[in-house]
Length: 273
Image 1 (cartoon, rainbow, N blue to C red):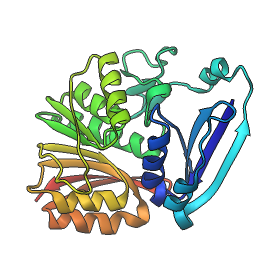
Image 2: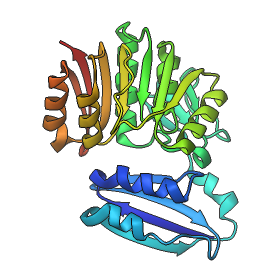
Image 3: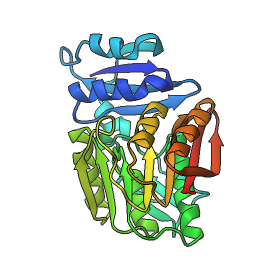
């Protein structure tokens, strides 16, 4: 078995992921660290594709491409590395189906990495979950919510479980929407999922919007809003990008109510002014 990984700067992550999903629709593995995001795909000898188009998409943001052989029993051993993730001070647990929740009574979300585009470990996902829980604590997790760029639907599922209804999710990638639908079923959640290109189409309007996207895509969403939502949880941006993102949403009638930071990443709670 061959593991092929692409490590890039956070600002190029969206482009690299989009290219990878074209050649690996079954899903990719994601990791992140200081100043980089890494995506990996797996295949047998001769099955791993060339990455010329992905190198071009990453451009100067490309950090490293690696190809390495992994043990033949990887298909069994890889599960050992996927542990439950505790978020919002242990009030939410995201876990693979073969692990039990380590926190009795926590909001339990099951996401199997094999089909996921994001499993809750990234700081931006953690901060979005924290903000959704805070909205629930304040009695503001009511009414409809839509998750823009839903991926594995982690945030949409959390939104539904803390009280929002109905909850929708949109994404451009069909494999992501398929994974989102499967994860919703596994968690007993009804999601209204649809395919939308947020770069070219206005985002659907709901009282609450959730968007864990890159800064350029967040700016595109802001420009495409036909009316401001009542509130919005967004992340995926680097702390140094907060100013440009908040300026973009200010033009759409939204102001920052809260900002969370984790390392070089930030998340924002916005509200209509």
